[in-house]
Length: 404
Image (cartoon, rainbow, N blue to C red; front, side, top):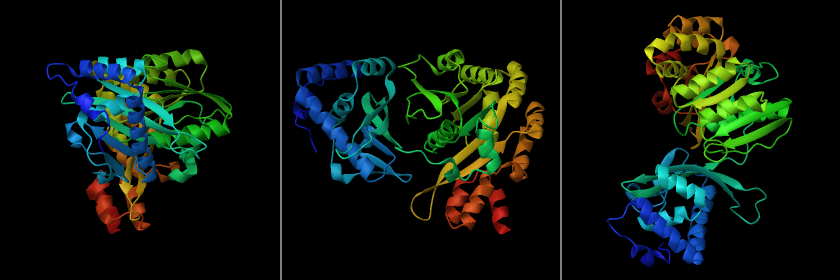
């Protein structure tokens, strides 16, 4: 499905020019040919409309890896869409660049990658805009992009299957202080769960919620709480700056989109320790992995100090996966650690390996292992045995639970 301006774009290609200089030439062409830019935007919007129509979470285009095809992920499976035919790499680059403003392009040229968010009305009859998170990067010097659709609604906290003791601890009304981590691999629904927790607090407490994200995804409307959204790169320089600056903004709850390094972890522990309720996400596969990952981010000489601070501030760890269901959709499977005196002692005394058994026996406190939840989903005929075994962290333990 070639766009009309492709031949003129191809004529601009110079093999001795850097990608950023080539794309800057595209900018100049777009400025001189507004109809090209409009055509490119319309084409991208048609791709996003189709993404919405087939309920795809992600859209990928551009770069050699896509092979000139448009790819969509539907219920966990990514495949090309033959309906859109082939698109040239330069053509797809122009399409993506057409929706960026000047500042975003400058950040992309400088950093060779860009995370951003935007909202569009996919249909004239829509009363609400649909938000997308965009990620643009280089692959073999060619521009590639991913667009993830952000839910236009928030799942009620009750729909996530958390036990009542956990829901209470996530609520500012019952627990004013502590760090909650929502963990999982990419595409496991961490942001969706975090939005449900924010929404619950927004509707049940009077307070102030500060959200720092890169980019900001779902926009929460202030209800009982003031909800502030600060995007890294646009409203604040970095996650760490956002965490520090939030202390001067009189928050009750601070939400950090993701913690990535030792400095951010230390700063988050510090503001939690100062008496705030904090939430963040982490790319780890289990509750135990999350504890080990945080401690391992620091040099050995600092790890004992971090163990103590983590034990004193950590409240809940939710580790989750989206598992293919028997109905063809995705089902949430979760592991939940609720920190109590025994868990604190295990963290401080370097006995983190013992915590799995504590989770196994902690159902009265709302705790559950990934294997226990997978076994529950299997018994309720939500998932297959193959899916349960594929997504288990401890296959031996899952087989024991199933055999009972």
